[in-house]
Image 1 (cartoon, rainbow, N blue to C red):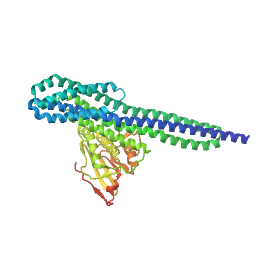
Image 2: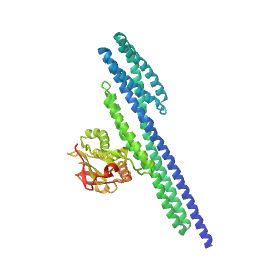
Image 3: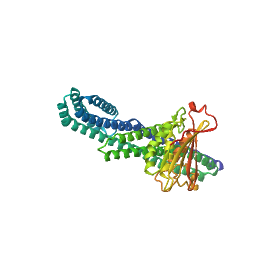
Image 4: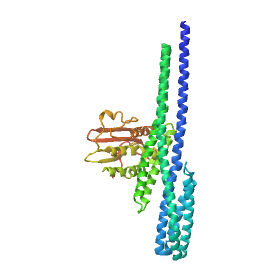
Length: 464
């Protein structure tokens, strides 16, 4: 009977092992499926949504410029023909690049309307330009009043409708990434409950078998949590970093709506720079995910370019909050990581410093960079209220927020720590109540510039 009992215990262990392996395989398949979905969404943003908005913005600016030159031609005559021809050529190039892209889902009708209206605008533009080049002011003025203005207004309206649609579609894609994160977290809970049930069942059948079985389940649960939670955290990071530049785009669009009578160039430029930062962030984080959360090596970027990105995206928020933002110039430093990853690291730190500086009498956020042998240390110092001692040890863990009044989801500093450590660096924080905080990031220098540096620390130019 003891032998039969042992066989039953062995069978229970075998059954538990089969169930455990099956759930692990299911989790792996599910994780890969979710990664494919996330890859598809990120690729759509990178190769279609972002370029569509960029080319439409250029086309709107060029067409407005062309109309201004034609108005100048009414007063000055044929001498404006060359400038008008150049503006028309820039408009046609931007439109042609947009039309070569595949329409986004639901964009087909807007795409056809835009194409037809732009073709009509091109035709009347050529007619007006021909009259201007021929010096026929009477025919030029008649064409400008009767044909050009209505056709241009219609074409600009069609481009604005398509532009707004593409912005909304980009925001929906970012929301889809967040939804993937939520569904993955729920699946993690279900799979963990399943693994716990397997462990308890095996323990109730045979004590000796359950001990071996418990070890197997615990190992399985750790692997399961690592694999599935990896997707959860990464999806949250992508949504966190994409939604930040999209806020800049939304602000620029509102400024365009409020400033209809003025030139849209500065607002379009701000939106384009924010879109470029979206693409940089997606490129860096997507490459990071595909390499199993490890740097591929061989990548490098200029620290000056990183600081330019950070200043472009954070200066407005700092100014709005009355914060003196000081960023180094001309550091001459090159980091051993991509521009998108480095931007994500320091933009997170600066945005947090500006956001949580509170009602301090001195409101300053300063970045310093110091070379230390083959590393560069970048410090982000603020004059805020400081970080409570009780949360400093867990500050870099996912979903931990440093301030109760914060509106974030607690992934910014977790993103910083993960990206820095994956590139062979380290991040630390020093903070005291009432004296502000200093976040220090050590990152390797790019091989081409780090070799001749001595071991002693060398500060770089930190003029603001």
